[in-house]
Length: 131
Image 1 (cartoon, rainbow, N blue to C red):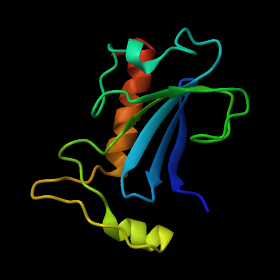
Image 2 (image 1 turned 60 degrees about the vertical axis):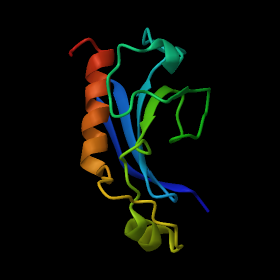
Image 3 (image 1 turned 180 degrees about the vertical axis):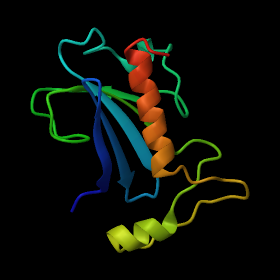
């Protein structure tokens, strides 16, 4: 059984935007770039000019990779499990049919699918020099 579902998979000017929701109750967003892109193969640690929720926390890609989706792209990603981010316990139970411990503390906020999509679009625009 998969440990996440794909909530959206879109293209933005030749870049791929993907958002996932995991069985631990939080979302991640990814922007995939093709081999022709100057950022293909770059480590997210060297991409400090990219601004997004919590900063980039992921970069990877190989031929015929399967994460976050099947592709030949190089992915840059971020997660929504930082201090102040909450988990969506009800959605985990609905989708994955399993209970999880609610780690919501007073003031924690569950990042929505639309917020992840907005961040992915912003990352893509930054990679393309539009922001």
